[in-house]
Image 1: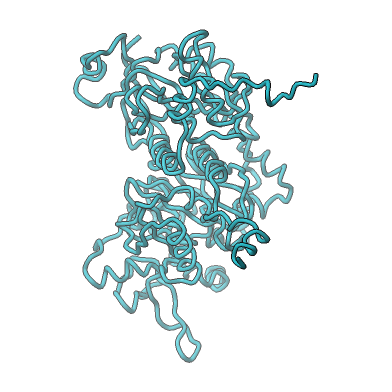
Image 2: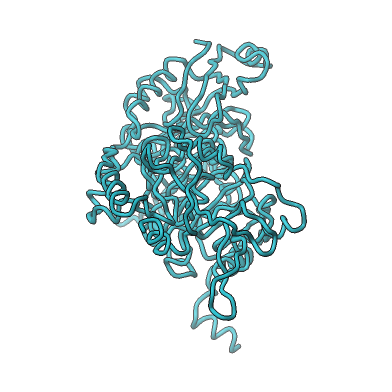
Length: 231
Length: 329
């Protein structure tokens, strides 16, 4: 009882944790630049923007860290026991955000692939306050402009790519006619679940898809998404 | 020694800046929510600004959340770059951020505006920030804010339609002059801020992002590019824009821009001039488009396809009362 809590606190820093915190912390200039990119891709669904991120850091986590802060209820979806779990902790540390459940979170960072079950529990807001619907930063593998020659197959040819991509047809506000987006690392069933979650507009979920190379695309709840090809 | 003592007594010098990072992030989150739900008024924690509420504090907060040192910023007050409100807001932001001043609409990245949309069609990559003095289009119809929210939540706009109908019955036309109510993407009724009717069609299918911010009422709402923004009207009452036969800008001669009457020495309003000074200057220099696509009759018909009648002749919004008298006489 006589021992001071300050003295008993562990003093030895874990180097890896520091490196993670540095990779996620966004300066005012970086968060301003991130925001203009996120605004552009959310206002024009299907457009692919580029975030400047530190090597090795999950882009979804970096994007969220530029926008979330101590006032935001946040949840990180990460596979247990993996490196993702350590990054999840770093997100809470870097933002100071309130760690809450997926169902209650205003901001959700999905470091593992987003599943149908995840989409099912996320908050969609209420007609009186639709803005409380979850804003999701979902980590995917790659994002490719689906209008480019090849579409899904063109994306398949990229070096080091694994698994099938889905080719999405997007229409709605922000899109002149139709935009196409090829996504690897997001299942067609999850896309379907997102469409169903957003069917009750203005309630819904807004998604930023964040690829490993720093590219990012927005899928606001207003976007009508159709899966053209892919699993 | 004295300086040292003063510092000790007064504390450290105030932190540089007029807008802290946490505030910017809250504005940014509200803007993204507004983009995701076009026309919906997102509540936000409006901060104290170095300008009084009602003098563009909402627009200022959005602009400060958007600008970087590399941005080119244009600020207009009723189309005028040199207006008192515009000049001071621009000076404040430019000195604070270190971004570049701009008056040419084509070159600007961010355009903060009080009550006008520039005549020059906006392009991809530009953000229009409109200062909003009254965010709630239902304010004059129901008083209770809870009821206004319920009506928006349920898209129950029957009372708005009744109000417009009564307007037509009493006055022969919808008398709303500035801030004409619009329906955004078929869901939310929104005020476009007090822009003249002339500017309302420019919101429909715009290439640029439009963000509307009311600092006093603490609401941010937005219209993404390529979004349907349709003025509320009836099938047999086409949406009309301001037009006075024979009137043209005395400087550039334009009759296809929004022109306002100028007072002469004798106090009479006999001459007209462009409201958009940048466009007027470029028209005179031969550096502006010969036609303005937004206000061509075809564009108006597209916004109201069921009634392809030409715009009726009405007086400018500067004198709504006089217009009403003439129309109903």
